[in-house]
Structures are given as C-alpha cells and as structure tokens.
Length: 252
Image (tube, rainbow, N blue to C red; front, side, top):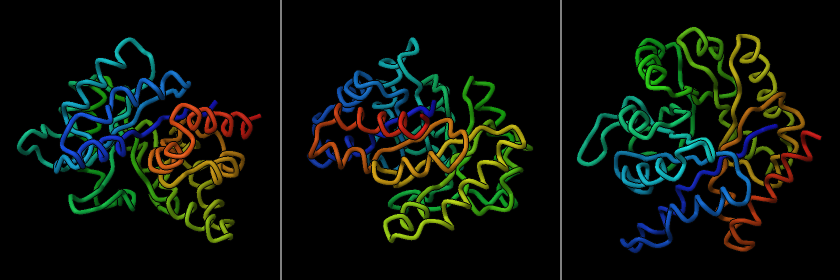
C-alpha cells in the first residue's frame, strides 16, 4: 500500500515565527506516527527558515529503530553555510532511509520544478553514489512531462518523486485529465526501467484519491502544506487518519 509520509515543515514555520520552542516539531511527528503514518518528511534549507539541522537530529533520534521512515529533502548542490552542514552530511548523520533530491534555489518559496537531467545528471551521479553508500535510498524530484525520466535510473537513483503541483492546480480548476495522464505515463516509464515512484506537492484529501486510482503503484506520497492546514480545523491525528483512509479506499 502507498506510504503516507507527513511533511512537518509548517510546524517549524509556526514555531520560528515566535523564535521559541513551540509548537514542538518532535511532538507533531510523534502525533503523526501515533495516528499511523509511515514516514516523516522534512526539507531543511540553508536559510533555516523552517526545519533546522537540530530538528533533523532530534527527529533522527525519535525515528531510530524503525518506527517509520525518515525522508530528508533538499538541494544537494547547496553548499554548507553557518549551521547548515549540507544535505548529504545531514542525511548521513541522521541515518535517513530516503534522501529526496530537489533542485530548489535559495530564494524559492517552495519547490516548483523537477531536475533537468540533461543538465544535472553528471553532477548528481557522484552525490547519489555517496548517499547510497551512507545507506540512503535516493529519489529525484521530476516533472511529469520530463523527457528524461529514464535517466534517473542510469545515474543510480532508486526512485523518482513526481512533482504533482500542475496536477493539483488543474484539479482545482476542474480539468485535470491531461495532467493526470502525464503523471500516470511518467510512473509507467519510471517503473519500466526499475524505478519506484513517489509523488508530492499540493496533494490533499480532495485530489489524492483520484491520483492514486489513476497513477499506478505509487510507493509513497509526501504531504505537508495541505495536511497541516486541514489539521488546524480538524486536529492533527484525525487529519492523518483521514488521509490514510483516502489511500486505503483508492487502493481497495
């Protein structure tokens, strides 16, 4: 069944807005785990605007022993600075089960495109090798309409994560057929060369079911912004359970 990995960046955004310790990132993760999610996702950035390296270390201790998978996202090309040691160093130190590599620049509000493997493949290849040597499964953030999805397997990645933002926006506009078809075809192409498929960005309770019913064999969905937003009204644990019910219904 598709694993739900909850991205808790937004908890850190709220905490950082007051410069204190609350709400607790660790308590949020514990609540999500108690509600049954299969993974915790964080996306630390060099500017420390939400999840910080100390959060990663705290969560690594919490998740040690296999309570759930720890997925750390980020730009592998961003250099270390100040207290940010670099993505590869954080993944190795935390013992993350999965590293999701994302080509986001420092100034981006959120990830909004996948890798161009014609341009980035040779830079990524040794970094993927280093992450896998540290015990991390490696997933590459990719656009559904990329012509180069198969290259991810050639440079050693284990998975791709389909960037689902365009699908989610089309769904909200009431006409998602084309974007949904692109996602399904991207998954089929990836799986044909031995890659597993994750998905994430702007997925929510309304659009997740149709996505999973159409896109074959999605291994994991990473959901944060919508889930945390919905939890403001319904509570964190009940919201996680609602997502798990959507996943179960979609997979029968």
